[in-house]
Length: 185
Image 1 (cartoon, rainbow, N blue to C red):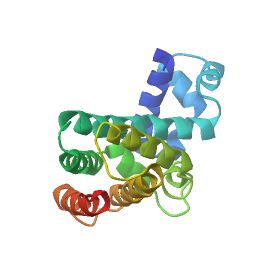
Image 2 (cartoon, rainbow, N blue to C red):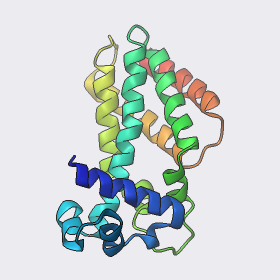
Image 3 (cartoon, one colour):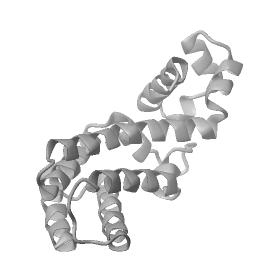
Image 4 (cartoon, rainbow, N blue to C red):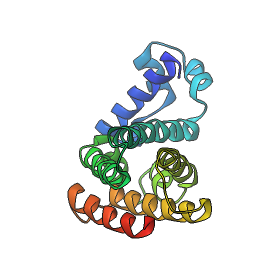
C-alpha cells in the first residue's frame, strides 16, 4: 500500500467514524490531504472502490489478529481457535469504524454496510483463506473438502457475532472452541 493510499484510507475511516459515510467526498479527502481530487481518484478509484478499500483495510486488521492468535498457539489448534475468536470479537467490540458502519440508519447513504452484510463474498473468501492457511500448520483429521466446510461454518458464525454479538467475546470463543472440537474430532 502506498503512503498516500494509506493516508486516504485513514482520513476516510476517521470521517466515517466521526460523521458518517455521507461526509466522505473526494473533494473533502483531497482538501484534508493537500492533494488534488484527481490524485485521490487515481489512488483509490471512485467512491464505491474507496468503500471497498476501507472495508478491506479494516478486514486486514482483523485477519492480522487471527494470524497472531495461531502464531501464539502453535501446539494446540483449539487454543488457537479460541484465542482467534476471542481477539477478533474483542477488537470488534471496541472498533469505532465498524460500529459507525453497522449503526448506519436504514436508508442512509452508505455503500459500506452491504459490503459487510449482503455482498460479503470477498470478505468471506479472504477470511477463510487466512484461517485455512493458519490451520495448515496443524495435524488435522479432516480432508480438504471437510476442512473447507468447517472453516466456512466457523468464519460465518464469527462474522455474525462481529456484526451482532449475542454473548461476550469469551462466551462466544468458548462456544466456537466446543464446536471446533466436535468438527475436528
